[in-house]
Amino acid sequence: MGKLALLMLIAGFGPAALAGTRVNVEQVEKLLAASRSLPDGKLAEKLYGLELTERASSARLSQWQKQFAGARTREALLALADASAFLDLPAQDVLPKAEQDSAATKQIFVRAIAYANTTIKKLPDFSAKRNTLHFDNIPAAQRLLDQSLRDHGSGMRRAVAPGGGPMPAPGLSRSGDETSVAVTYRDGQEMADGQPVNANKPDSRGGGLTSYGEFGPILSIVIADTIHGKLYWSHWEQGESGPVAVFQYTVPQETSHFTVIGGGNMTQSPSYRGEIAVDPANGTILRITMASDWKPPFQPSESDVLVEYAPVQIGSGTYICPVRGVALSRLPDTPGGDMDAGHYILPARTYLNDVTFTDYHVFRGEVRIVPQ
Image (cartoon, rainbow, N blue to C red; front, side):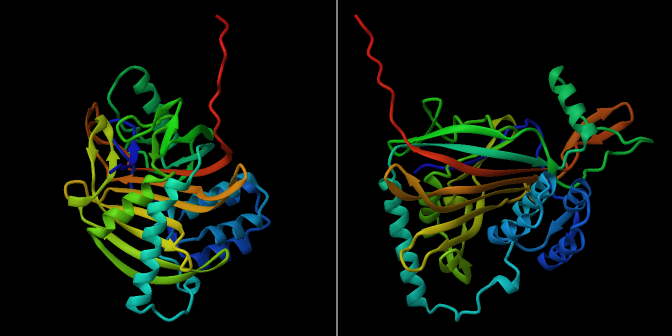
């Protein structure tokens, strides 16, 4: 069986919990309604200082972004919603339908299993673009220090605030340019630069945090792992074309195929949990999440992946493919070494990638005739 990989490629340290004001979805909507006259930068600054306590769905994010033309505000809303992707929906977004009986629940999930076992085989060879926006909570002063130390081959140190003491970590903000990577899906494998992308040789051009497996392995991995774990009925929620059945699951570490690679290429497969959102009529998987459950001494680390699927036109056919993804990584403060002022600790960090998959095309290999 393959593995889904989430890679933290900054050696020696990792990200940590956000440092924002905790708010719910209703409070964000009230803030947005009262802030429409604010300049783009000012409103974005306010939003980057928030942390949601419940999930803002893709549909809700779209509604929020339509209210504002400013690029910085729209990006801040994106980061805010993405960071909430692994939380429960607010109560008002859960459809008030009766809980499924066990027979109906089983039938829906049987359709999902059949879908996961057949959908990858039905995909044609295609090419697409993986577009990634990068966010983190690293202070500007720390970022400059990190780059300087990397340039000189030195170990990581913590920037010191004016007057002494640690540099406080802000909320999330945009980091670096958007990256766009061409991806080819051929003969059932994800390829980059003509080579298979896998957990041992990842496509690391996405920066400090990247992921692999959205084009198929995540479906088969979670479904297969869930057979050895536990599956629970959760709730109904509204999809684009009707009600969506949502299951929750847990997978023990012993049977986990969710791979996380950290500093020094240390590889771990933690236990994990998540949700599977299914079209009840045909078993099509529309959203899947994987949220790590680390055991000591790695707690309270967090390594999470979300993928959303929708119909995509490839050549003359329509296929269910990834259209959006989120990769989130958090780690606690990591002990460092000694500075002149004494013992120091690396800053708490969070890395967040927002991923969109676009420009799907039928893949046709080039044939070149060379004259003899």
